[in-house]
Image (cartoon, rainbow over all chains, first blue to last red; front, side):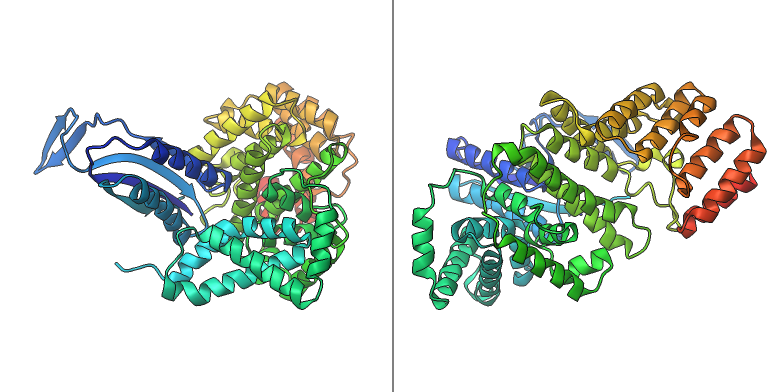
Length: 115
Length: 395
């Protein structure tokens, strides 16, 4: 089963991301890759554009948008079931909790359809 | 909405960590069977305690520490702990080698019968239960139990370490073969629960990724990964709506999995940059020719024929020659393909007759083509293939 795991930040602390968090994330990424589970990933640049349909009207807006909630990255995992995907997301979020005080966010685990 | 079931969480942690736990305890005790039992005991203790006490911060570390303690308890009970300690003390200091890779090489040891290697690899490296392995291989559960039992018995005399340099090529070949056979069991089977079969393909693909990551300088490890990524990209497209097989030429290429193709091509590039392509790398390069063609008509048959020539050189077999005949038949015309086919010692092989039928049909020898397809239909034991060949004979 394939899962899209997104990371969204909801509260940004004043401090920059600590170096130890960055290296722990790299290490976890390596472990997940060597387990054969992590198959694709990327961080997202902050400059988002929107193409929106509301009430029959099509609007194109160029970013960036000043929003508290920001999509930070995505990863694609290939694992045996949802519990395994959740476990990887859990490890990822635990690193943020432990190493970057004040930071808040959410990881969403979406099962992907495969045809 | 709701909290996840703690047992499912524990099972997920187990599947992620079990191979590493077993590998660590096996290196410590020199005993695969004891390592697996201790890891199982640790898992059972987790099932008992984690739902109340919560999942530990480092669940893999918890499982490893607990499994080590269980192993020591067991050795004490058997009264051999002191002896084992002395034994370990007398051994030369262990090379700092990755334990997981050591476990892979041990499970695929040539002293173990091939079916035992497959079962043991799925059990130790994949965390599959005996029942799951039995379902996947369509054999009774006690049969798998026996295979694993005999495999462990054969391994009792085998030191748990990475093979010495002079044995490495042969030992690696055995590891690659085991992963390839697991994949093929899932890929080529026409009976059985298709969901389980896809699971086998996935497990083999996962193992090939693990191996390639552990052996980044091995061209063939990356080659096997590349092959399995690209083959897996067609898993869905090769089965029609009624469960019938769809041949490569007729597959809807928009249903090929682009992510797996990309990963396969990347792995192939790694295989090419770390050495001369071996049998698996060459098969991956052949699979890549198909993967790179947007439509069947765009296939680079000349390149395919050249790659088959190389493959026939490093791994000669009549089946490789048959495939080369198909590629040459497309690149240089049906007569050139027929010339290769007609010399092959594959009497009674339905695919040979089907390839002949196709080449004859394209050279306008309609009656001979019909006869070849009828012969293919008569020879095959696969119902769906039979229907396909009969249909071609009527066309």
